[in-house]
Structure formats: C-alpha cells, structure tokens
Amino acid sequence: MLRVIEQDTEKLIEKIIENYPEKTKKERKKHLIYNDPECTSSICQIKSNVKSRPGVMTSRGCAYAGSKGVVWGPIKDMIHISHGPVGCGQYSWWSRRNYYTGKTGINAFGAMHITSDFQENDIVFGGDKKLEQLCREIREIFPLAKGISIQCECPVGLIGDDIESVARKMTKELGIPVIPVRCEGFRGISQSLGHHIANDSIRDWVLGKVKGILEKETPYDVLILGDYNIGGEAWSSRKILEEMGLRVIAQIPGDCTLNELTNMPRPKLILVHCYRSTNYIARYMEENFGIPWMEYNFFGPTKIYESMRKIAKRFDEKIVEQTEKVIEKYKPLMDSVIEQYRPRLEGKRVMLYVGGLRPRHIVGAYEDLGMVVVATGYEFAHRDDYERTYPELPKNSLIYDDPPHYELENFADALKPDLVGSGIKEKYVYHKMGIPFRQMHSWDYSGPYHGFDGFPVFARDMDMAVNNPSWKLIRRKGR
Image 1 (spheres, rainbow, N blue to C red):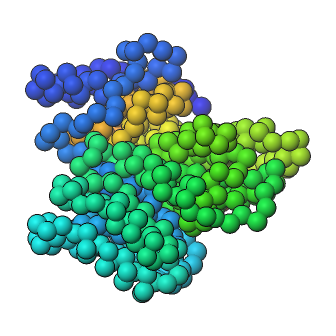
Image 2 (tube, rainbow, N blue to C red):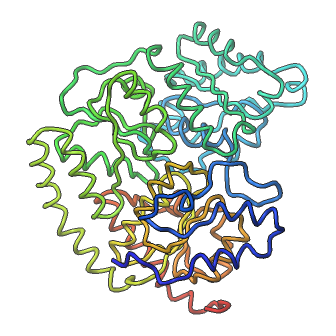
Image 3 (cartoon, helix red, strand yellow):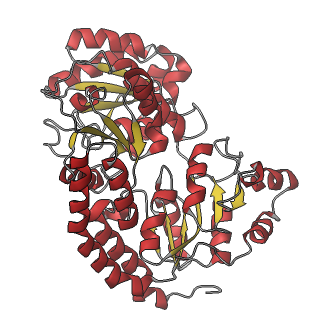
C-alpha cells in the first residue's frame, strides 16, 4: 500500500486559507497540517479541542448530544428524559441507528422520545415539580423500565433547577434508579464534554450504587466499551470475541441494559472501541478496580487480525490457539471480498471527516481495498486522538480539525477525491458537487461495517458508491 502521497499538502493549505482575514488565517492554520508520521516535534501537532470561531459553520454538536445521543441513549431498558424544551429531544430522537433487542415500549425504549416539554411557565417558575410528575408517570406507564436518566438541556442549567434532589427523591419513591446528567448544551465546546459528563454520571450514580447480577465469573470475561451497535456492529464484534473463546459479559452502551452497566467492575479486560467517548470511565476502572483496558479495531481484515492477536495475548495459550483457528476460518471469506472489489477500487482517493474514532479506524479497511485516504479529520478530537491518527495515514495526507464547510468544499475541489465519507450535514453538499459519498456516522442505512460480518458490506457499499454509473450523468466542475 502506498504510504507516501505525491501532493504538496502544505501549499494546498496556504492556498485554501489565503481568503481568510489575517487573524482567522493565523488561527485556522494551526488546525491544518500535512501528515508526517515520523515527526515528533510540536510543528507536526495539530491544534484541537478549542472553541469554534464565531460565525463559522461547524459540524460539531453540543454536550447534550454527546450524553443523550451517544452514551446514555442506547441503553435500552431505561427511559431517557430530554429535560427541557421539545426541540432538542426531537432532534435527538432515534437519530442514530443503535440496534437493540427487546420489545419497544415494553422492555426496551431506545426508539422512544420522552420529554418534559418546557414551556414559558417552567422557565419562570422552575421545572422540578413537572420533572417529579413525569418520573411518576413513566413508572406507571412503563413498569418494566429499569431506571430513568435525566438528560438536561440548556434552560435547566440557566435557571438553576436542582435535578439532583429530584433524582434522589424519585429513586427512593419509585424504587428504581433515577440518574441526573448535567449535560446542558452550553457546557464545553462540543459533544466531547457531554461524553465526559455521561461517563462521570455512570461513575457517580451507577457504580457501587445500583445492584447488578452476574451469576459467576470466569477467567475469560471481557467487556466491550464504546460500541454503539450502529447497524449491528457490536453484535459482529461480540461474535468474533465469543468464537475466540472469550465471554462478553456486557457491551456498553449498544444494546446495553442497566444491569450490564453495573457489571463494569467484573471483567478481566475492557475492550475500548470508541476511545474518545469512553476512555474516561475506562481509566477510572483501571485506577480504582485494577481492570486493564485496551483499544481494538475490527474495521477491515488487516486490523481485525491484528486486534484479535493483541487481545488473545492478554489471555492464555488456549485463547491464542483458538484465535488463530478463527482467523484461519474467516480468511478465505476476507480474501474473496478483496479479490472481488479491490480491482474495482484500487487507487481510488478517499476524503474523510467524521467524529469519534472513524477518521483513523476505517483507514485500514480502505487500504485493504487498495484505496488511499488523502485527507481525514475530526469534529471534536483531542490531541491524543490525533497522536493515534498520524501513524495510520500515508505521509503528506491532509489532516484538518473542526473545518468549516468552506474548507471542506475547497479541499474536495483541490484533492479531487473519488469518495467522501462524512456525516449527514455534509452528504448533500457533496452530492451536489457530483462526488460519491457515504455517510460514515451511521452507515447510510446500511451496515454493519465492523468485523467479519461487516467487511463484505463495507466493500460492497464503497464499490456501489464509487462505481455507480449515475455519477457519469452529472456535470462535475473540473473533474
């Protein structure tokens, strides 16, 4: 695979930002770099996790989105109250494809929207009484719900409602845990703080306070953390781990129950899928319970084999041997997928802009198909995310942090990617530009893309996007 891209990325960056005012140009230049995996000095480090410039059209979300929409929302047997006006809750309602088992409205509630529907009177006089009544109604209407979380929207923090007191009172009255989450959207600079707040609420209100059930422990117990089961990818990961001889005692939060949350102190190893959104609780478990954690990547056969072997080395020879048998079992399938699709995708250029882990994790899957990632970046990454990204990319590839749509559009014009992978906010812009696009937040109604089950779907979808004959009917400027 080509590990050096023949493009003058530094010159391209200068050209794109030259239209900015001087102050903006100076600031944005710190968020744009060309990749040099061997460079360790500060000039190779991109600036990240700072407030977006006022007036810039950013793709970031808010702390409420990071908590309700990402970490808490997929926990299926709890009711998650959007506490505030109806708008934010409506936007977050089933906006991610977090698959789950169960009967919606009976013992699973992921696709339901429950809101306190703040009105002007609630802003003026406070919403605590309304919240108490809502909790009572939830307990009456949904008796199989195992708990309630209170996901705060901006007005709740601005008027100073005491949701913690309400939570303690309702927990005692209703006999189920009621968990307050101070994730008002104005907190922090992106959804990233919402992840952190959600992790802290699990630490403070669940661990050691909610009693769970795990009949017995084994030496092979593992816990999947930070997999949201989008399109069923957590199920695909679980299948691999179980075939290796491991026992998955919880997958958090995709298709997760409250009981699984309580089992977090029980595994022998925590496997972290999305580092950005769950590393906080993983570190806490290591520091306070002595449970080691490691990241894994099941996107594309190269990374799958590599991660499986790294996981197996944490256990005994029995698991190591079984892991090699599993790899041997699935390798013919993976080879056949590559043989089918690589000739059609070889050398195609990919431009990515996603959140969480995908700007780096899916690079290997593209490279397995012979594709080249010429540019990638994150909406809300921190410095340690980028440090994990540099080694995954070819030299001279473009890396951007929180780019406005002006930059994304102009980079696409200059780099001429054959495929763009990003989110729903970018999708139709690139369609209008005549550039093939895949929605890499929730797999464009497809998936999974993860694991041995997912790679054939991934390869098919990338081929379907890039080689769709309809693109030949669109006039594309300069292409």
